[in-house]
Length: 244
Image (cartoon, rainbow, N blue to C red):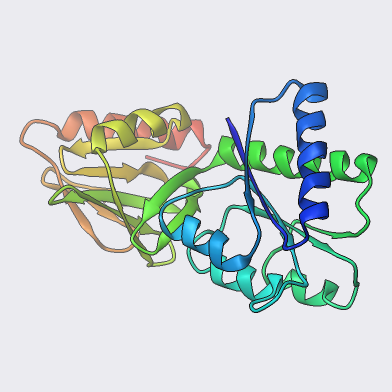
């Protein structure tokens, strides 16, 4: 289901956009859930309680905290939501890029423009979903590109995602479930019940451990060396890497 949020202090604007969402749902045959907020405080409170949205239509000129400031706060814990600014003024267009806005829509909003923008936002969501994992971390929601994941380890029911940049993300979940999600990529190996490694970041394999490019050593259980070696060589050949 597609989750859409609308935040605008203008009741007439909220009614108009909700009418467009209803029309879009019917004409596109999409399953859409829409939440409506009359101000940034209400929206932020909902998101802090765990509400997550695929697309957010956000008015800029609102009493108190404006849309740009609200978006800056949201980006502190949600990097994936597609933000579409709604405004009657073009003066904030440059600032909108600073919060990675998907689009800047001038009012009055017309149906044709609304439909095109929502088409584009949802297409972007689909592309990202195909190439990434959505994680619920301590500091909010983030989307992880599996290609950046060097290895993952589980520690006291916490998943620690070690990225190629050196950054570590924490999330809850099962390593079994994570491996199932990553298996279709064909580049992940589970050498140990507590670890999952990306074969593209393997530096070397010995009888006791896999050494990653970061120099982290992942233990190999007794008798598993040949299985690990064969998986690594198969990956290397598939990717045209030179091996002996």
